[in-house]
Length: 91
Image 1: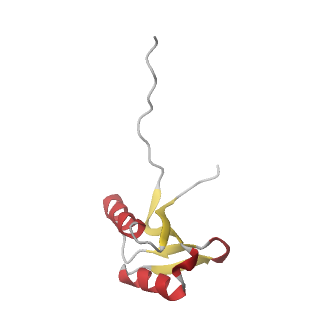
Image 2 (image 1 turned 30 degrees about the horizontal axis):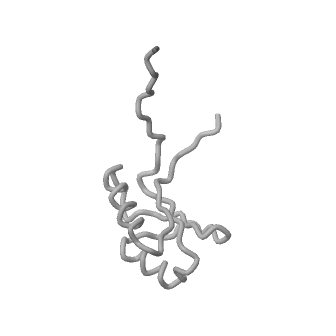
């Protein structure tokens, strides 16, 4: 049997100053504002039709710090998902 090709792990470039968060429909504006304030996050853009937010981090963070923040947010019942704000280039 020929060897199986396993590509090297690759992570696309991402912002060190913002993340994307999706919230539950029943989270409510007050609950969402409270959650973001607890982490020092500022709304950059509200994707109203999708229940998603682009959020500015309180400072530039390392990948590990962003991963830890995403883990904390993901553990909250108001959050459906939290992820890095990946940078995509259309060449």
